[in-house]
Length: 183
Image 1 (cartoon, rainbow, N blue to C red):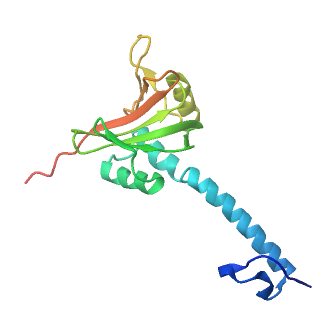
Image 2 (image 1 turned 90 degrees about the vertical axis):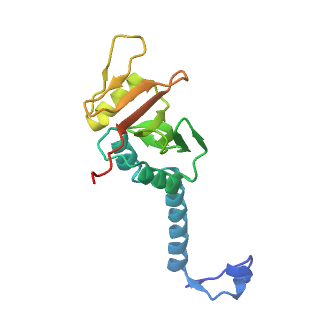
Image 3 (image 1 turned 180 degrees about the vertical axis):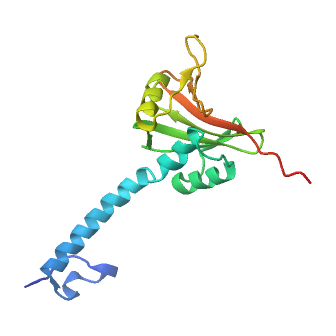
C-alpha cells in the first residue's frame, strides 16, 4: 500500500504530488524520527549533557581550574558571554540545573586576577543549595562562622555565599594560578 500526498509543497519547493509514493511504514517512521529529533534538539538546547560533570565538578573544586578551557567550553555551550565585569566573563545558562537546583549564570575568571575561578548563581538560598549538593554529591559545606549570612565552605575549598538578591546564592571555586616552571 502506498501513501501519496496530493497537495502542498515537498522538499525544495517541489509539489508533493510530484514526489514518488512512499510506503506507509516509511512515512510513519520518518514522521516519528522528525518529531523525536525535534524534541531531543529542544532538550539539548536547554543544557549540555556534560554541564553537571564539567561545571558542577569545577564548582565543587574537584577539577583543575583552567579559565581558558572553561571560557571555551561555556562559549561553545551557551554562546558568547553577555558581560565582562569584575574580572570575569558572565554567561547566561537558560534553564540549566546543577544538583537539582536552577542555575541562571556561570562566571569564569579572566586573566586580570591572580586567582582562577569558576562561579555560578543558583536560584535558591545557600542553605537549600548546600542541602541539594549534599544530597546529590555528598559534599558538605559548613558555615564558616555564626554570623547571620555565613559563607559555607567545603573541605575541598568550594564556597557558597549569599548573593545580593534575596533568595539566591553564589557558589564558586577559586584557586591561585599555578606558577610558571622555574628556569
